[in-house]
Length: 436
View 1 (cartoon, one colour):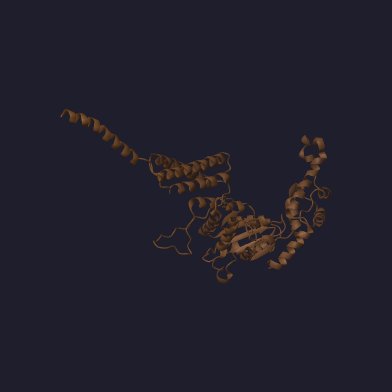
View 2 (tube, rainbow, N blue to C red):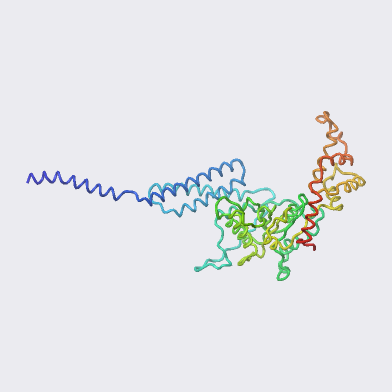
């Protein structure tokens, strides 16, 4: 009996070691689990980096840089939620991701809802219809995700530029087209139906400095519509496929907040002619824009696209076709220059009627921005005449402006538009432009 006990005392520890080794092998970590945990850790580090850089921009009061980074952090967190990692370390990472998402969402909402003087009211979203099970219709695309929505809604103009159509000298044809396409349909939608439905695309082209962007500011001030200001940086991204998603989100949000206006300054930089040698991502972005603006399933009838450019010949022909009205914004004529000079030289800078008429004749070929620069240069001539006494001289010692001041300034401020360029715009207008 004693021998049996002694043998059991020797054998049992061996069995115990074998069982423990077997259990240890069962507890070894699966390689797939390790892979998923590493993915979750990478997503967490990426979200942490986006929030850190967004906070740095936020503290520097650069909301234009902070908001997209907060939105990108939320998108990374949404992707991290799809990772199927488990265990205490995964739980810790998910808790950190939730904190980062909450922080980014709160700051993003604060930036969007920050009250500013002269803030334009944002059109409330209509109530969403109840969702039914089954396949989605082709004419009702999926709503954009929260990060994409945040990026696009950051481009909504939330304050009035304070410019009215009466503040724009001349350009009556362009004003009439904008009223018929944007202002009047918003006020009398019952009249603008069927054949009277307004065009959905307008191109303002002409020399630089003639008031194309100023007309867009006037539309933003007078139209009771949601106004999107879009540039190339608004719709391009380093992430593959995100440019097309941003374009789709832009038109989806514009349809939700209809009536809407999408203004694209320097539209040639984004929608130039397609070629076989261009970047594939750029080509897909242009194609998506064309599809959304006037493609199969497109139903944004209350969304107007306004483009401005001084290089109309570089636009893709499909874009040109969709911008139905193409209006030349020329250099100001004598009546427009008289009106512009009267507004620039109001008050203490006013000229006599004879000097004004002489100045209008002498500034043939000047654009609106050239005239503004000329007036600023001429206004400095009386100050320069005071020389060293300028620091102590009373304002009453500064003489009024004369035509000779402008004559001297014309040697410094020259017209910025060449005659050959004007001939080019005129030829393009004869071929593709709208004349009435």
